[in-house]
Length: 556
Image (cartoon, rainbow, N blue to C red; front, side):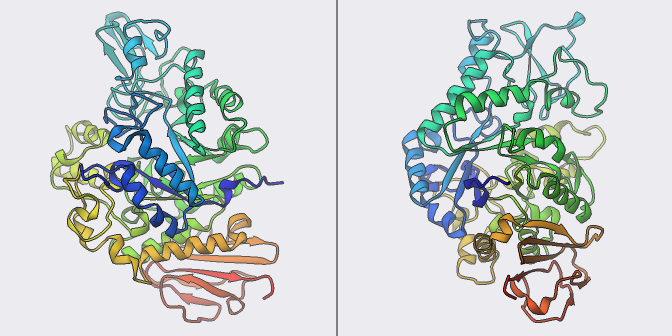
């Protein structure tokens, strides 16, 4: 029988702190700004918050290069401001989860600085290897961000492994002292009162014995040797047993290249070490493995990803639902239409918010924020974007083509400041913003949508309220009624005699829809739609990016 846990009835809001709201006027988003906006988050119907890293950091990877795990960066207001936000969230009945980033640290972390000097007990806190004969690298692995995965350290006279940026050395989780450090981090934040953790690339923490060369993967060599490594389940079980047990937490693991079948090894409710996983398959409907290898958008590919996770985890594990976060471009620019920004934004909300799982909304998603397209590549801040522009196919592609590539794929598309109003700097700050504000903020902002009943913001509020009101949406069974359609996503949820039917068109052109067998639309209530609510028999011709949600009550 499916376990009932608090996170299964929640809707989370992800905050990327630097760009959410600046409360002290220095141009950088902070916890003072978050405190100001707690009521706004609650007004959406969200009763959970996921914070991207708030810890002290040099900022090479915008906070994912951590130099101190047991503090809050003064840039964000320090521990005092964090406690105020945590208390404010809890007073509003909201849960708070932190980002746990323990595959790697900053190279400015005390552990690394002592490790490179061979100061015990830190000597083996990281993955060090001598050069091979001729000064060759220890193996042929690639990093995710900056060239090869090995960097020479002049002080130690060895290479260290960095799966991400050069200044993000990988921890050696095989060292039991490192695992003890992770448990200290978990216990520290649980003692502060946080409610769980989003665990960054957690499936990378165990590397294959011997760190062998990768002769299978043509790009990002090594990923099959450090993803789902030989002891990853042992380590996660250890963290749960020694640090998380005794707390009613929500643990969410980020898992690149994970299938539903593999995910059950982590999230099976009978034996798993995590509660849910952030999978990437639903973000691969317009690319191959990474946003930087673009493909034409395919609604079938998106639906197939949704359907597989809904069906394979049903009754055994729990889904995490999302279409945007800090690591991907804006979804309307990808899967929807900027021409039909509001209509397609509403449709995309319906496409995922009524699936089974815990939904996450990323800051600005509810406003329909879209991709940012600077004229100058030097305006990009993201380490991955800058490296791709400077190196990937630079000997083949002209500058304008590479810039267009970044316009489509850069993570910075999701990291421009939150657009609160049409005031200067989008109401994000009274100072000079740390990063460029998207020029469309005068028309796309929260203030303009607040009192408009037809706005995307208020559509999200209605959709979340509907999800909260109807248990069938949260816990009912799932059926896809048009799996072969390249235009329509038609799925239903059922709990007892109660049903919900969701109809989403992913195209601008008109498409003929007929209700599936057993669904009489005349006996249903049209509870949500992005166009007029006219009656149309048991079928209709869709308008551009139309969506409808029908509720069939038990007594109908």
